[in-house]
Length: 330
Image (tube, rainbow, N blue to C red; front, side):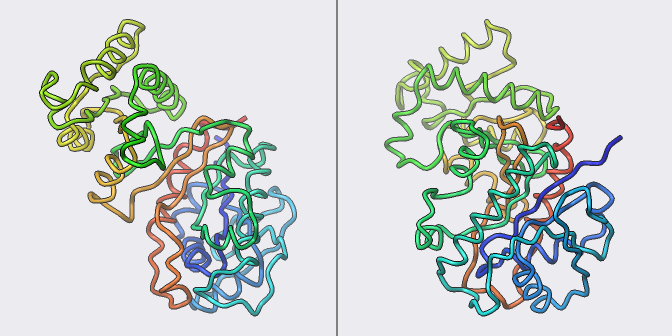
């Protein structure tokens, strides 16, 4: 079977991205799972290798099919967009612009079918703003790259998979989003995403209120919006249950009772996954022509360049890209 091929982005040069990426390329087992190409800048990568003390060779390539994909060698598409004299831990327009260009190049490779997935390392929103980049984060960039509006986010941590009905909204606004039409739509979208990833099992919809509202004692969203959407989805043949109380649904997901859980707002699912295992909680962006996986931590400017940042999340992001990427092969 053809090996999975993954593009990894270097992230904001001033953050921990380059050093955790360098450490990730030093994990031999990843080379047994996929061909991994790095999109970045040679100056930044060399600086990261110096910080980490890793003895890895850099193989500059222009096209993905030129890579060696051998342990001990980093196959790099060098965008040559960073000087050598930048500082770790500082907001910088140059770094914001460079990180943005790495993402768009990796996305271009994916849209052309040269890779099946993109694994991204952290970027800094303030550096993006300093560079006048018109996107606040990765998701918005991938909307532009893929042409897909509102890509579907899923977290995975050790078998627990969590989708999100909404992302970056105030809690009040997020509750206002919990309506019949949107819940039904997301049951359909999540089911389609599970099928594409090859994930079997029931989709559980989390409750919004304590004890899923206790039939209206603690709120009417379950009675008026959530339960009707679930029941109508069942009638259409969807394998979905709920609402299941948010204080138990994620534990049941970890135990394998459900294939995935639909979280009804941002922090509901984030707290559950990251409390269980912060470093191994990986974000996947579905519903695009390619898969995107990502660490779910930031640039950590306070420790950048000190060789103390852990590569665990980046390694997990690449592993999940290798696991699910072939489903996106074109």
